[in-house]
Image 1 (cartoon, rainbow, N blue to C red):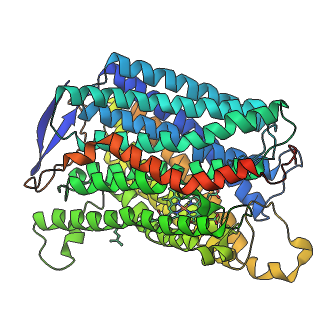
Image 2: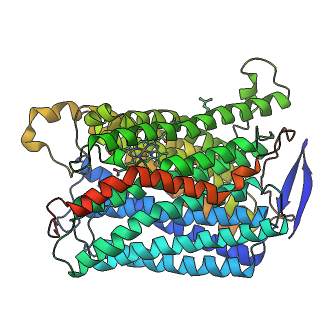
Image 3: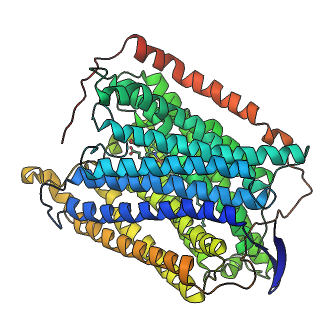
Length: 562
Ligand code: HAS
């Protein structure tokens, strides 16, 4: 371990040098994530321009093929690799300063599986044998190798989780009775949530989609496959969100020269996410037959409870910001806002993400409300919702992380020029996302369906009110692609060309303000939280699943629709 503290102005900033083994491991994860980002962003811009009528492709390049590449590369590959890299970095730092060989071996095996899966999946999409979108709903039938690829990515990600668990278990054995470091605790919670969630999609892929795609079974139970997918699909969004929350709770307080408002509150928040995020998948299936209304109402109620930990986070963030500002001398009611480091991309990019998460989260509450969902389901509103949440709140936070983590790993300096470029790039992304997601919400309310290629529905009058919004949505793709190009350019510079640092870089880990209230040890009793989650899952899913299996709806032969 090589950790010390240097004086920077009025605060002591902890600096940290990664061991070579950890540095290479984390960079390997981030590198693949950035390649996926490039592919997904290019596909996103092209399909956006095509969908809004700006360009017309030769028939050989299908809209749905580009949309599949966009969704898989960004929502599944970029996120997973980036998240595991980030969690491994923080685990190494907070659990003794380094990962042990056994942790690294697990993580490398996982990385290899994810890379092989990514390559196989990308080839299947590019050769047009897997145009099934990122949700790969049955009975759409992709090449079996696409499903094998997705299985490799999922199992590989589990091994990344095993690396985090082994490091954490070792630390706890060596520090009996002590509360674990917050970053590591939250990483463990994130990976527990991920593993419980992915069990659903793993069962779907192994027992339904792979046999269907290889032709071992003639038909597929569609309702069951969608239920297994959405059992996974909703907690998936918290697998994306929780690493962003880790950065907000743990790293940002140090960056803004403040302290954590509480140690227990973020832990409780993460436990609540494990408990409530999983048994709510039916809210993606409100409009599907074959699931009794009572289960859907229960899912709606539970979904509203999963909003609570995010509301707790709003409170904690405002408290953290205000405390930091006041500690630096702010006195007026809102004067603390002026003390925040607006010129520091490590704070500013995630802050823009937080701002966008306010309407994004409110839209989620609309989606979750059973009756209102009837208005927006399968419209572009939902696409707008996840561009405000995943593509804005989460992605802007990942930008902020990358501007700090990449130079910290390569021992290079985040120069003020790159910092300023990052602020510009974050603005470009934020404005691009506003131009993208706000019109999507509006045309969604006006009834425009999602997951549909460009069409004017034979110039039906119903399309008229949508038309003014199309050029704006199309243009947003250009803003967003430019922003990604700037981001990747900055990453290349920080990886290979930025000036070297004489002392190790800063690894911002915030301290807790008030340690007088000890953190309840029950929050660290994982078997209890996993068991309670299991009980909730059993309550919500047992009857509907048994019903779907015992009295299955008419199944469908696999279909290749392209
Ligand atoms: Fe969602 C559909 C409900 C959050 C992603 N969601 C989706 C899909 C995706 C997605 C990808 O109930 C589409 C899937 C598909 O392809 O079909 N979602 C919710 C609810 C929440 C929610 C209730 N979603 C997310 C997050 C995502 C995400 C997070 C990605 C990361 N969603 C749904 C439902 C559907 C759905 C239905 C199905 C719709 C359908 O019919 O198909 C909640 O978790 C949201 C809670 C969030 C808040 C906001 C808190 C705000 C914070 C920022 C504070 C700001 C500060 C800054 C401190 C309540 C924490 C200070 C600011 C100053 C101005 C000073």
